Image 1 (tube, rainbow, N blue to C red):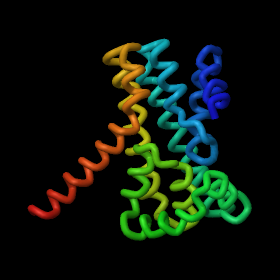
Image 2 (spheres, rainbow, N blue to C red; image 1 turned 120 degrees about the vertical axis):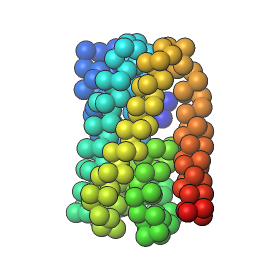
Image 3 (cartoon, helix red, strand yellow; image 1 turned 30 degrees about the horizontal axis):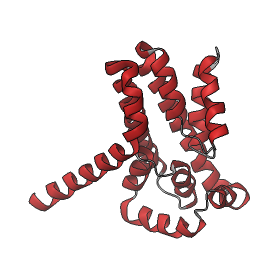
Image 4 (cartoon, rainbow, N blue to C red; image 1 turned 120 degrees about the horizontal axis):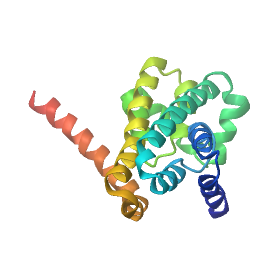
Length: 192
């Protein structure tokens, strides 16, 4: 995995870096193991003024890749989707994901899209379980854009000195944010 991580970072030094970011974001949302945040951070730190543009490229690539993952689950689950889920060792969790979708629908996609949970498993599962596509698309767009624009925005505001903080604490902060968001909605529902 470290070699793959290093290979991804090498793309930051090429003239094709923006395309590589788009392709990485697309691929990670449907089958590839390395998250695009790695390349997004490298590019943003190299050119902080372009970090918002890179966040946009990453978001669009990820949303389109999520749609491709949905298509895999919808049309090619037995041929391709099962293999991808098995590769990540999540076959036993597949039924749990079905239950999450039946209970939380868009929330399951949104949480997976923002946190370190393997998003590709949720995109493929969404298609396999026939989740309403417009709901899937809206939840994907909101969560993936929030994730990547948060990273791009932090780099834009604080420059390269924020890189180690993002790399060290992003997953923890993302999970904490989702927990607080869910607790906020529960509190609103209880008090209204």
